[in-house]
Length: 427
Ligand code: SDX
Image (cartoon, rainbow, N blue to C red):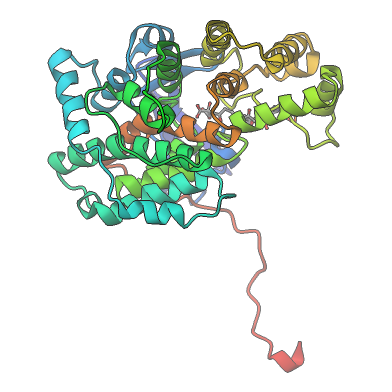
């Protein structure tokens, strides 16, 4: 490959530099295209367009590779604690014991939420979707922590990071407990990060809480697997909102809303609803496979397909094994796990899916574990957001530290040409 890209427009050729990544990826830097040629590019869904340079997460969609700061997702899921992974994503390296202890201490010190936030929570109707509540309360946190609105120094950045990591889990627990009609409490200062989240969610007011290590381990692994995924829809939202210098909490609140969509994080809820409807319909997976392939039918096989992965999503492989393990250890038999496995088996031998390289993604099996932990379907995407929080933080921090320009795409106008105003009585 030469050291310049050439684009010919009409009778002129324009040259552009290549940008090469540390894993051999190559991009054409077209930042001077419009100035040179008065022409722009257009790429709906940004399928061929990079928005930034990033050192946080590497994906190889063809090979099904996912790495956080160079560490494979398989090794991290097997060996790490979620808070270690959060530290790795945000600060770039795995913490030593002293750094991890200090990080957890700093988080614990601010693990409280203003009681008035409960009044906002109580004002939501019982029918409110947990993702809408989570996004609203995350944004509302700024009103109770005004110092996080404007981040201009390393100290202010660290303080905002610690606060959002401390307070969002409390809100997640409150949203879960409100749905169950349970009292809203605080964590246990003596516990680790994931242990504390689990206790905040599952502690019953009328009996002593006994930690179930199977549940803590499963949640730890699921949070790690969801922690970051380069420039997905919600992370791109966090970056572009943050590029206007909106605060971290406001940017994450926007990311939560983007994740809510059923084509993105909302798919984990949609998968379980799909599997439950297949079971209710008699378990005829072939009928639903046919619907998924029928272009006239809006039905899609939720939890299948991915913009980047054209091979197995490595996270889906891990979660599938974890689902079997957790259900066995908890002594739960769930017929929809068998339906999911049956769908996967059929899809992987069906040319429609093979030709389009559609494989199970992170959302296909995760809901089966959440269901086994008695987490309601509507809370599944909230659990996804809890896992993705450190990734959003890391990406937002990188965008601000790299001083990326405000995100403001161009467009191609296809509307009316100039026309003069016509008085009402003449229309
Ligand atoms: C997440 O980006 C990320 O990294 C996201 C994520 C993360 O960690 O942040 O990994 C999390 O969002 C995972 C994806 C969860 N969404 C779903 O499971 C919803 C179901 N999947 C699809 O809607 C779809 O696969 C997307 C949205 C995930 C990807 O869509 P693309 O890349 O825009 O692909 P496409 O819609 O253009 O599909 C290409 C073809 C089309 O058929 P043809 O027009 O070529 O005939 O594949 C078909 C689609 O109709 N297709 C499906 C399908 N997914 C794609 N057909 C049936 N069922 C599906 N699930």
